[in-house]
Amino acid sequence: MADDYDDERHDERQPILRARGVTRTYHDGSQDICVLDSVDLDISAGEKLAITGESGSGKSTFLHLAAGMDLPDAGTIELLGEHVNRLDEPERTRFRARHIGLVFQDYNLIESLSAGENIELVGWLTGKPARIDDIRRLAGELGIAELLDRRPDQLSGGQQQRVAIARALIHEPSLVLADEPTGSLDQASAEQVMQVLSESVDARGCALVLVTHSETAAARCDRRVRLRAGKLEAA
Image 1 (cartoon, rainbow, N blue to C red):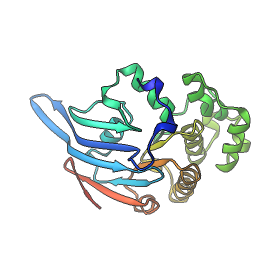
Image 2: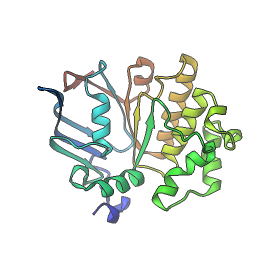
Image 3: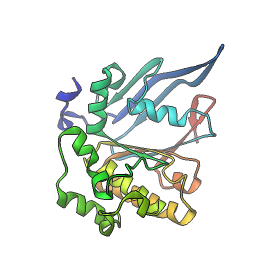
Image 4: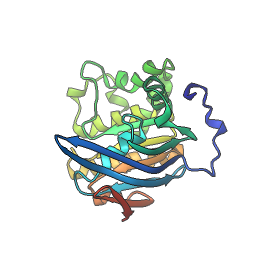
């Protein structure tokens, strides 16, 4: 069961994430559209991987499957040795909250909560709230220590994305999944956010999977792959 998993049991020689034969097809009226076609991919602990490709190539779909937010039609996804797609929905939700950090293009912050409360949100959901000292220390690393009492509408786009990164990292995940995290930012803010994200995952030794159209963002990763017409190929 996912709730019984202990990070210390993971063999660091094995991939953090292992996808085998992952296929996802969507039905559009009478037409079947294969978005992912037998994708195989391994991601190691501490590795930063960029997934590139044109819009509609299946990048975000793969990220959603890796996070257990959707299920493949065929194939398996293992995270930390756990077959994520074999868990039921409540188990996947708990497993995701414990082991995965999520960063989205549109930040996904709750407008009625302060920046600090948004960072704390995962702890509330898992019943394991972060210590305020840990939140302040992480906020300091990300350059938002003075902004914790502000609501999202009082922050710039780059500041909001840093809050979202803090929320993704505060529970020390094994894997961070970032879906176009700089897509809504100007070039200067995008470069700053990618530097912060890259340095933060390096400091914590977690793996990063980055979906992006940005060559600058992809260049900060250790390895690149490309999705084209549902197939995975070397970038």
